[in-house]
Length: 115
Length: 114
Image (cartoon, rainbow over all chains, first blue to last red; front, side, top):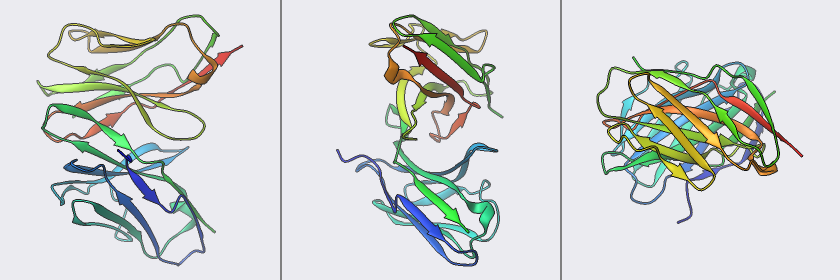
């Protein structure tokens, strides 16, 4: 299995620009999670999907952030417009929830720098 | 609400020795899982070991084992024969069996010294 795939691995952009992060979960997994990690705030859950439906987006910091999962094999996290305080590592993770095989498997992360 | 607490921000151990990382949690759920994740300098989050709350037997994975004390809501990780490659940040996490959602602790940075 290829594992969770994220792209790009690194993104440097200027304040005000739109940023789109992409994620391909492990085939057969039915839940997908987006996290943000910073030194100050640690690992934060932003939003998660179950069977492509957003279940909890209470961690999304503000309206500038949006996430979609149009099908079982693809999700995006968009920031528009981006700000320097959005600089962080963004992780996508997937799991086979409710199947008796617990645990989330993480992608390699996208390091975002907003200047 | 679920909470996870790791009270040791940093720890160190000599290569080949044994170290134990502490974790306590609070939960309102009857069915849940507990996990330890490792994050080396490469920043990849790696699932190290998992424990089903309904199982009394402690989970083991090679040099990694847990001490699960359900009544005390304690879930410590023991690393035996520590290796330099074990140097990483370790996160304890509570997982809901219904949603798969994880609640992470603050992490413990482990340094294995040669």
